[in-house]
Image (cartoon, rainbow, N blue to C red; front, side, top):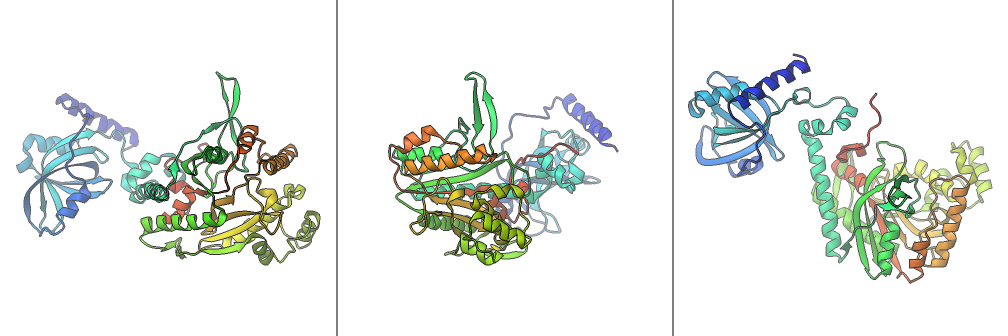
Length: 492
């Protein structure tokens, strides 16, 4: 049958249900147990045994087999699946006929009866009654084998989730990661806060923003690229430990590693530096690994990964120098000439600088893929870190780290710059870069500078990409697998 014919057949059944005076979309159903709870409490039940324990379950019809006077239905909910044993003798002639002629794969039904096992030992619910809770008017995707086209899976997420247990499991584990993060930070005395998503100036990160317009105020606004500058204002205001779990937006490409709308954790602690932030990050991420995978050692994409603390630290400049063999201390023009002479492929726009962007490109190209176990790359160039405090040893480097796991960046952290004059000078440098065509350069935020002049305590801040961390913890190769509804391009 074509899909049109299948839908027509299901609508005929819907009409028959309604003709019997039955509402196929009732308001509620009392469920006494999840399927997992039934299986757990009856795991020792012998074959061909029948209890007097009546249960009420609900879920989606996954399979249906009629064999004369009996039928077998596999019912699934979020916690598992169980068989319904349907007998004409128990259910009655009229109800048995209605059940077997009006039921379709994908229907959501409520069922009640006693728990039993078949002669083959299959745990079942002996059906004493049922209720149609939602008649499915479209057939399930490819008879429960799921959508084979990956793009269709992301575009038709409901179909993907209903047919793939692993897809649902990833979102359940994502929720566990969020709960674990909150639990850890709450234990540490952090306060969860919320900051604006619509901002007059897109600050806090080097990224191209999405722009929008507020009609009533007749004002241009931006979806935030990061909550950082607002969280620092809270430090100024006396909230000494704050965090936010929420969405940020960056107007960049879509790939297996990037989604324009993403979830991040940003946490700020007064009277701390980036070394303290490393300890916090280690403890937090390891706890997430233990919560999701049961231990500090796990497998990702067929390769072992170890989260046991302490993690490796590697200096940015040393990592680039050792991986490329170039003299990273040279001025930009000399460094560029050496790279070209040695046939390094570099985007031409990097030629205008700053030098840190060239070095960052080399890090991402030649160092990042080798950073499998959690590794902190520390002490970044000042000219690509406008919000971080300089190191004590060198004024051209800052106390910043990025955390790499599985060859991808997962976190970014600073000893926060709290000198308002230094911060103003850094913003001026960013303004100059933007004037030269760098759309990702940051903007001068006068309101933030005014607040900084009130005095912000020494502080450390860390931002963790939740989506990328979840990818590692659930063994997903694409960021789209761990986002409920990833952004998808036009239909091809």
